[in-house]
Amino acid sequence: TEDRQREQSGDRPIVERGGDGALKITAKRWEGFEGEIQLEVLGLPKAISASPAVIKKGETQASITLKCDSGAAPEVFPVRVVGEAKINDQSVKQFAEMQARVSGIGPGFTMAQISEVPLAISEPVLFNLEVGATQVPLVRGGTAEFTVTAKRREGFKTAIALVVENLPAGV
Image (tube, rainbow, N blue to C red; front, side, top):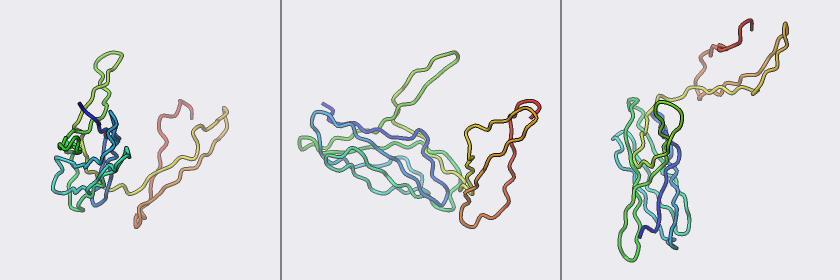
């Protein structure tokens, strides 16, 4: 009998080159199992290391911290998370699973359980943009303004050009 199950959250784990990231793992505990679950990431490239992680007795979540070397090239790797627990004095291992939406040609979709997820190494993000409005009212012949805030990575001072796209005709 399976006494617990693990799920990965986030369908696209990403680690910046020279940065870190995390995989949040959630245990679904069954049949009264409350013991510790040791977590391990399998399939990591040499450029990424993972911290040891444990879902503690009685708890349902833990995060695995990932660190990426600064010289790593952007790439995608399939990884799996395995949990190991003692049940009735026996070591039991199980892969974490997550739901993936699967759709084909035409309407509709189905959900599938997968245990292997793509982990991406990305270029460092130099800035993020935040728009200060979700809607901008504009009357015919009028003007409208909205605020865009740039959050820059430390040391990034280059000018950021903004372009507004997909406006209706005549705007």
